[in-house]
Image 1 (cartoon, rainbow, N blue to C red):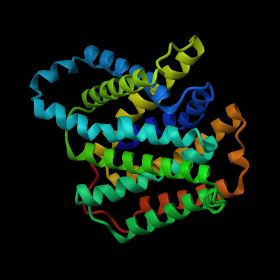
Image 2: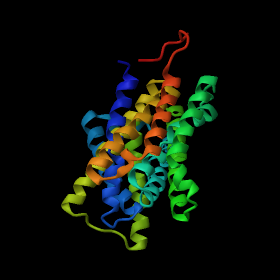
Image 3: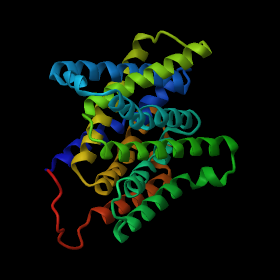
Length: 298
């Protein structure tokens, strides 16, 4: 198995729990900034311990001020803006719909890879993107056509989250900083920003034991581990192929939201048909119609 696919698989597994955990935390009366505040604290602390244990923390001695600034700037779209937008959308839409709409981000990863990384936009990539885009459109069609201002706001927020994460993935592939160090730094910056926002709004709080467990899972597994393994997968593999694999996640997510939240997205024909169309886009991208000239890095 190629290393890029292994790391992508780890991310997909943990990301499939995002919709469920996020909805549970938001349903406890916390807003999106509060949920992000505690979650990124756990993410940053976990990566701090990991970097100290592996000795990678010493690499910070080699960083200049410019390196720190660039690392923060390329990280904020994925560790701050993405979550602000997605959590905002998840607070409005049903968990399954918000998560599926948010999965426009692999499409945006390919688009930004072509813009920023100068990767070639082939006909196969274009068809795969169009088919996957159609799948997302089928899933969200009812909400968009309902002309509900609240629902439309939820869709727009989730789409903005997708754009943010797509930009984040492309930037992380362009700049080759140590992934674990960069993610740790970015999560602590996000923690600082959300601390200031919550303090100014008077929204600082102490989570209960059960909430702390949810925040810990969200921060450690769906953020720290999943996001780090994802940028490693992109660094080692082809952006378009790896990004399209992420569309497997909504299927797993539908199972979790149904079992734990009772969300009926798994029984919604629009959601199921849309996801099937999305997966068709995955296979279009992954199928080799001719023998590749260059082997993907292991």
